[in-house]
Image (cartoon, rainbow, N blue to C red):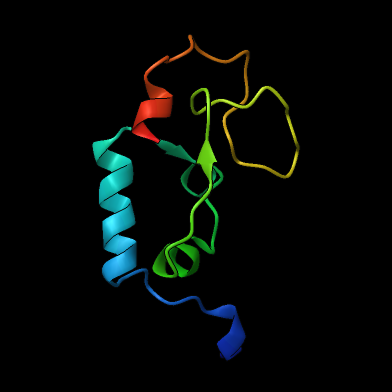
Length: 84
């Protein structure tokens, strides 16, 4: 059975995507997009949009629908605002 065209998402490529991926990696930043394993990451980053997580990669909530790691959180990185 063939999948409908709308169910397929394009492979993330392009200048904006590559630039944002590089900036996030170089500055050791956390994004909701990556941590939540968002299926729209390629589309948003391709348009130059992303959402940062502040205070680390851990969320203190524990939403059942979300893939973000949960817990008490880590030590505060006081240099994080400068990297953002």
